[in-house]
Image 1 (spheres, rainbow, N blue to C red):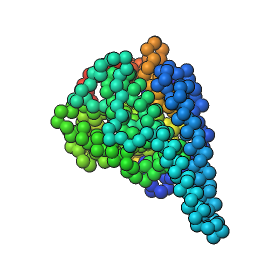
Image 2 (cartoon, rainbow, N blue to C red):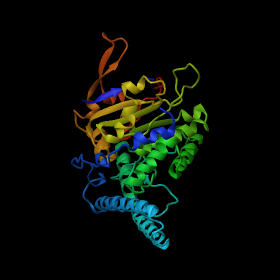
Image 3 (cartoon, one colour):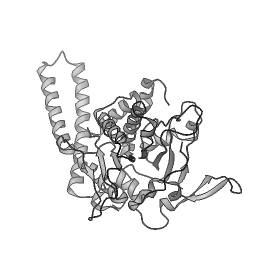
Image 4 (cartoon, helix red, strand yellow):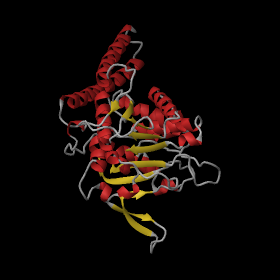
Length: 375
């Protein structure tokens, strides 16, 4: 059963947060939820050459990086046995192979961002006054990034700029998540995203900036937004709207405009999660649960839209199941109880699509502006 939470209003010693986050079985991250590929070649597991190549290279990277880490441990314990040239040569060879595979996955360095545009000669409805950005999740090279951008562009009929969080292989991506999530380290892609969003929000021609993030991208989005709170005015930040899928972050701050006020700096934050998505369960679903909501240190703001289902891939398990379905009876048609003043018992049933602001952007539409700010 789907559910909705307004999430009305965690951090401790950052080094103490790492051990529980490391208690992750990689087997639980395997993509076991294989749906029919509703979006065809844009879906991550659609059996075309580029997708199969990326899956194969990721498997090779996992095996190779495990061997590399184990070999490094052996060399550290037996460095007095082997001549120093042997471990050095092995490390150089290993990193050379890893670099070559990552170059294939991520592509060569680029001076311009990848952009998603609607297919089938459909014109994008946004211009320089309405800018859309997307931050991808783990294990995403240039092929899957472009697939994500294109499907997002098709769904919303907007031109969408990609802020690429390049993959370093599953193992290194997970380690990077720990560093970003628990130590708040600003990696290069976080710094790049901060520069792009700051420029967009400061531009006098921009009226609205929409940021979509998936998986690890939710960690990066939270870090970027924290940074922007100290650099931009409230009027500039008022332009920003944030929507996440399978968010892996520990926190998502949205401070009040002034002390004692219910009005927050960002008007619109929405999180979408599958209840069987392991990443969402250690991220957004964990830190917006009833138990977390009543803790004094809870800092996860935004509405939460929860679907009964599994899978973590953006296109296959989120966009296809939540936003791409055109028929009745889908996720957005599901009715959920919400608190409403004036109803007989204070509870009313409403369909998800009436509660979701993101859904109101679908097919080039625009939601009504105004209304009260959201927690």
